[in-house]
Image (cartoon, rainbow, N blue to C red; front, side):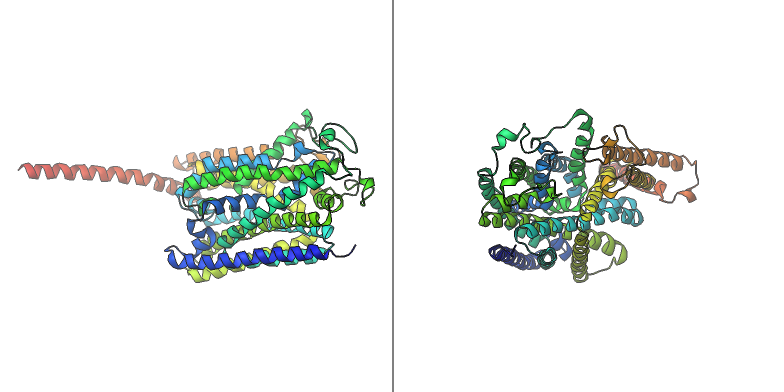
Length: 552
């Protein structure tokens, strides 16, 4: 198969448009920086906390609708062992945005935080916060790698372009425009990318549904034809795993810096809420084409196509079913349009991950720990270097190919089982302290490792109820073990924070053993109310004295 020249031309035009938009946005960012009284770091990372509502909706949606979203939904729908009921991503994301809008956005915005990790540093100090930043940074780097892998595989199928070239070109373009203008460049390119995702996917769907090699998907929805029905089923003994996957996607997303970067860039709390609600609706709409692609692929007689037999699933290519379906079931020009959708989705997620990790390192590690006196000019360079380092690290991981999928899964697990309970406690539970944080962190990590991971070849040392071989012969936990670990971590943070507070406040242990100095911090927290009471008494005494003087 020769390289698809028309497809390459289309992709070149797409990259030029995206890069041009990024350059224009960077120039706009510089103009805003001259007018704005805020620091340059705030403008770069949060667009001066004054991003346009429509642009905010587009960039939040584009961040979540990445290559994994588009390809993953199609893969789950096509996979005969899963089906559309396991293509969970659109619905849990709705819950993510609604919870974020109603509960998590308000405390973040009221305190004018710069990143998700600011409340941790403010409450627990630099040492503990650095330990908590690590899983967040790792998750972002793996996010970059995961999105590039999906693009490389798609280009390899449709354009016959070598995997290495497609990865490197996409990575360089995303790094360059993220470097130029920070969140402004990322947000405005996301507008172009989201429009392209929407148009490209919905243009391809009619051609797929009417191709001569596939049956009517309404006939194969609940009946076995060429394979099991594409709707799929959730058996009673699989309900625990389904629920666990749902909660992982819904609550794990609340522990990503990229989400709060969009929320904090809004000009008001109301705008942040509207952004979340609109993005939730867009995620549902953009999930439909991928489900239809998977349904058509599951309803196709592959022996009658140029692909032939064995089927993509039997050749272990279910993960590439979207580009395969576009290539073999639609005209060439339609498949090229489809690759534009995947490329746009990948770029929109990759640039968000780049800026997210750069925000965490530059603000929470470099500025708050390494060089507190760093100037705006110096911080701009730190952000740029961070973007390049994360981009190169993520690009390097893509050459591990399918192993990156495993690391990405680990990253999501870390966000859910470790970071989410910590975030809940730091935002909503005043009693949490360093002792509870340590116990919750260690407990969540240890339990997750001992629970095993079939994709890593790690056997479970702890077998929860229902642990057995799945349909593919892998030993799998069908109990909602991730959610259980998350809740155990949350309870342990609360419990041990309370115990430590009792022990030191009652003097059961000497203050010299109080490594996190919680007794002084609790006293300091209570101090403002005491000062306020004392001030009111002084004001009352002064008022009485003034009245006496006047009456005399």
